[in-house]
Length: 381
Image 1 (cartoon, rainbow, N blue to C red):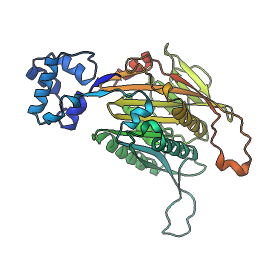
Image 2: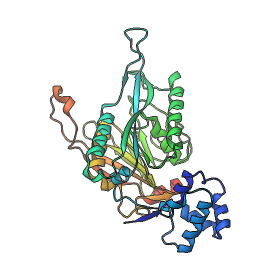
Image 3: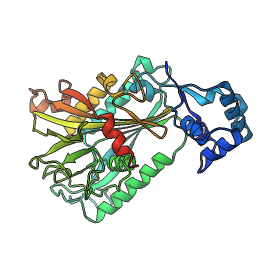
Image 4: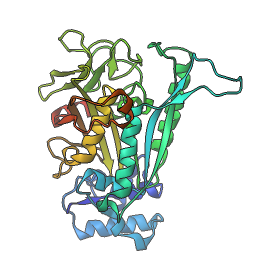
């Protein structure tokens, strides 16, 4: 069992976490400012009772109920990914939603056709089923809600830079801001699908690495992962994707997933139709709030990654916790990024049975992004 400090979360819940609060608490309690900073970031391994007493007194004077202290200042690091999700009171799952344009509708009043990626939908349904039935979560079972991030889509047109793109980006930005500004404890989110179909993923990655969403890097990479699009993909401008190789990659222009290794060299996992592909899982955690993005370069690899998250979740949640070789702590958040190399299994399904395909035999190898790489790029925040 690993205990964690949750001072920052208590202060946020009572609107005490504001600019200058570290210095103010240090002055009032007689601490060094760096001591308060470490407490807020859960970087203190041991602490004297005198420190705990002064913190509790400071919080009580500012309206935190005395009966909730000191227990509210401590939490237990969950032993696994879905156990951490299960500690949430509510989980929101976001999918990209295609609003088709360029097709005739039957009546002037009819709405444009709407659809969702089949593979993204399969992943979300499996996660919902797991969260509602897994025996280990019975004592903490959260409520789960699916939400959608709309965008306009014209069949056969890969260039997205039409009139609707600005509207799509602005709508997704508002959804993302609402998601992040909700400070209620115990709310987690799962984003499914790449930035080409789920614009919240673009905002999440840009926020994580402090760069502009939908704006490609010009001089040097700002994100240690990258998707090199195919010509028939939706060519969504991105801070970590595009038609060309990432800056600094020396191989021929190919299509697939790139990531930086521990020597800061680009490694490439090529998309090969019906043979192999790759994708990414990003996980951040702060107390009882987990935020996860899961996406493949193709829809089928998203499906395979979803299966891996449920079948071998330990690969995405180091038991040694923050400070392990594949996670870093930035602020009060524990952050891990995992590259998923996918080998497709051979399918023998007849065309009339496609509705029953679930690609359970696709093989996923999980490659944690090295801690050195995360530390370097997160320092730019």
